[in-house]
Amino acid sequence: MPKVYLLLGGNLGERTLYLQQARESINQQVGTLTRSSKVYETAAWGKTDQPNFLNQVLEVQTELSPEEVLQSINLIEQELGRVRHEHWGARVIDIDILFYDELVQQTQRLTIPHPQLHLRRFTLLPMAELASELEHPVLHKSINQLLQECPDELEVWAFEERIK
Image (cartoon, rainbow, N blue to C red):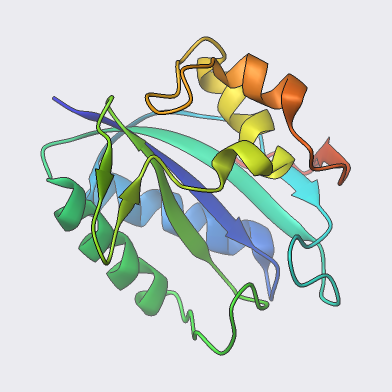
């Protein structure tokens, strides 16, 4: 069964509650949640004049195709109240596909692996917690190597309020 890594993030409302609801929905609609990283907090990336984000990486075993995973996570975002106003804008929840096994895919709607994950410390740190030696199938470097080389200087810290 394929293994997919998903990044959850949000910076509006009850951030921990939205992460919890997203995890539950993913476990019901996408596949079996096998592992999750700690929750991390960071300042906004890209568009910086907004509240801090909480982020978490999930490892999920799924029977869905990459396109079906995308469709499911987009539906979960909508169900939780995600409204897309602006690129990199504030949001209650965002769910990104980071990896889908070793698949390399680029279509109009979906690029796997996520095209910017190697540039984002808030993605690499929780990803390294789950799969530090996983090799990026395009860049041919481990997650640890990508984290060490990451140009992103935003501080990322473990969020004290652990989510069960």
